[in-house]
Length: 333
Image (cartoon, rainbow, N blue to C red; front, top):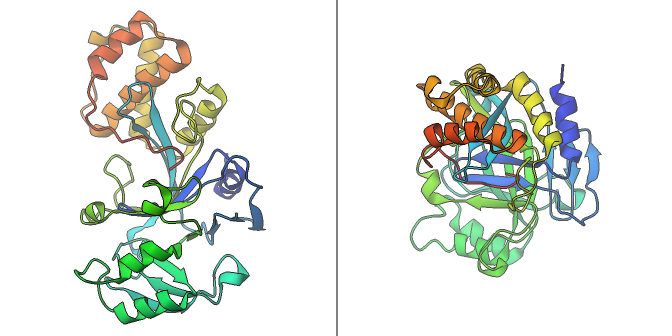
C-alpha cells in the first residue's frame, strides 16, 4: 500500500507536480519551473528554490483525499490530492485585521528569519495568509495600518504591498508555502509569474468557503494543503498534450487508495458498461453531483485512452454536453 509520507516526498521532487496551501480565495502555490536548478532539499518534506518554497511540518492525523474535477473543455479533467484535517484541528487564527506577528523565526531560509511577518487579516479558517518584509518604508506603512482591514476604504497598506512585493507566506496546521516572486499585477503584465505565486481574490473570500464546491472533501474535514500531479492531458502551462498513459495510471492508483468510494464506483460502472458495449440509453445517470462528475470523467477518460469510437461519442452526447458543475482548468494548481 502507498504510504502518504513516501508519496508526498516523491511528489515534492516531481517537477510536474504543483502544491498549494490556502483557502477558497487566498492561496499560495509552489511549482517547479522548467530550466531552473532543482530545489534545495532542506528536510524530508521541505524544498526551496529562488522563487519560493514549501515545507510540510506534519502529516499526523492527515487524511488524503484524491479526486478529479470536470473541466469546461470536454476532452479534459483535473486531478488533485487534498491533505485534510478534522475541522477543529485545521483551524488557524482567523484574524480579521492586519496584525504584526514579529520576526519569522520559522522561515524556510535563514536569511529570512529576521524579517517581520504580518497576518493580512483575511480571517480564513485553515490558513493565516501573511506577508513578510524587512523594508523600512513598507514596515512603517504596515505598522500605521495595523488593526485595520486591508480592504478598508482609504487604507494605504494594500497599495504599498502591491507596489513593493513582499514575500507571501501561507501558514497552515500542516506546514507553510513561501513565495518570493513578484505579485501578479501591473508589474508582471497582469498575470501571475510562472512558478510559485499567490492569489488573493476578495470576491471568493466573501463566499466564506474552505474549498471549491467541486472538490468532494468529506464533511467534517478541511483541506490544509493539496498537490496536483501532472495531468495526463495538458501540460503545466495549460496547453493540450498527447494522452500520457503513465501519468493517468499513476493517479488512478492514488484515486483507488484515497478517493471517494461513490465516485470510484460510478466511474467503474461506466467503464464496465462501455467495455461491454452497452448503449448509453441503457445506463442510468447517477443522482448526485459527485456521481455525475464520475460518469462524465469516465467518458472523457475512455475517449482519451481508447479512442473516439461511435459508442463513446453517443455516451458523451447523452451525458456530457453541459458545462454545468465544471471547474476551470488551473494547470498544476
